[in-house]
Image 1 (cartoon, one colour):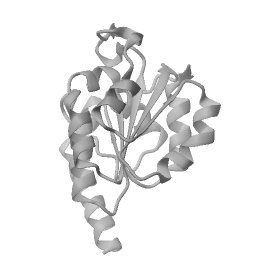
Image 2 (image 1 turned 90 degrees about the vertical axis):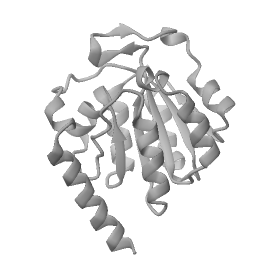
Image 3 (image 1 turned 30 degrees about the vertical axis):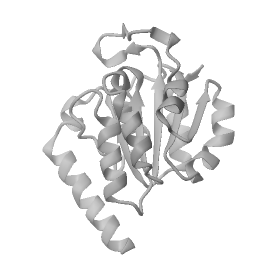
Length: 193
């Protein structure tokens, strides 16, 4: 098993400048590891990260969209995997930080704990490219290749808590964060048009 912040740091090294939809503990880690105006910190409800990322991927087909989901969050919206598979966005990469608990809500276990086969669920939903990693070195060796694949892509990262970053809820729910993202996205799309 790898520390989540170590895995996210590896991802940031390979994906320094694109759209990212991080939620809850992954968002707090990501804000510290890769602060960027294209971090979409506005999902607002557990389970919605993959749906928001799908909307962004469909609306911005020329941009890679990465979602940093949690297992507890995804369990609240498993149907999104079928919807993603059906829409088949070529630019969507869905990373699932799998730790078997609702970390930001008191570290309560998720249903099924660490016994849920999220990779198997994603495959059964029809996601064509599915990967699982529990060792940082393996993930580091493959992440570049994974980010170059045509999506949708689903990646399970078996993680444990790493560095404890501040849980800045006002930042992830602020109107200023939403406006910063909107402006950065407008600029990105207009410069690539």
